Length: 404
Image (cartoon, rainbow, N blue to C red; front, side):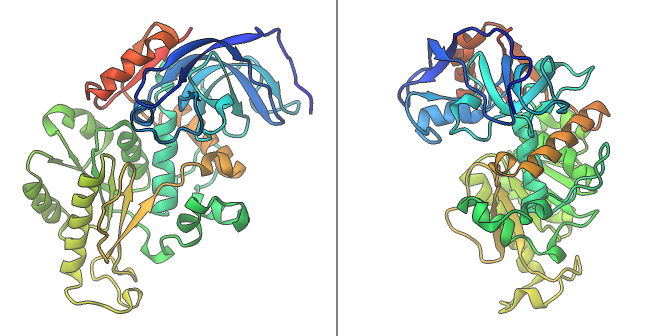
């Protein structure tokens, strides 16, 4: 497999590097142009979608494989070189969205002028879709799809030539020794088939205005779930109702919010997702535990043996997906799930079908793009943009930085 349509490229590029935690990113004008391995594409970066991890990892010193670190989790650009077979679905000249879940490989990081993406999980941008807006979508979509499709075992509906998409089954076909240890539990000790969400069931989303939550709303509605969102209703209510949230509960009074959740769901709530942190995930866990306790007032030695009176399922367990922080103390009747995001690049079949699914969902208008604030100025303005995010001034939308 040899590089195809290799253009003349510059010998160096500008990158944005983090030399130490709790320090600003700095431009470096002598960065290497990444070399391509088999099955990879080289992309000239045109826009970078900024994510909370971009400032949190720098401030708190996590997810930094080595220093200086090259960060950035998603970008849009044009393919300028490829090392893929003739006739591949993506070729030189195509615009693609890349999601850098493989953050240890700096060749794939967004904060540079040229970056690598695997051909199997590069997402082609359909005609008619604004590429700058699309730059805000990738991380949120992958996280939402794996949260619902793997942690909770839901099936994404048919798109294009794909039949209904069972992500959990795809991952379970992978050889066990090839699955990262921190993903193993979600894949090979999954939510039982009989305990997975049924159409018409409720799911609680705390922090429903976040961009990832907005993608979860759309995917959950596509699978037939009913959504109750906890949020600043005055600020975000209109958009969330338009996306399909069934019930909005204001976060201002969480005791009242818990009561409203129980009333709206008639105590049947079994699923929740938290997008904020440890304190709010603890609140979600308490709400789920109270609903479970109301259904099962006594201790049960074998929880899988007794049907749930509300759902006719076989488990007393409720399920909480935590995206940014899990409760310190676990409730015995609530299972905590962590999203196996890295499987987007670890499992080629999964990366391929998710990319294909998103392409056709965008093409067919199934997915609504997040609100974006597009900023000119290139790599040099990323620090100031991250400062806005750090101060909490960006809510319910994404910042996208244009390089070209």
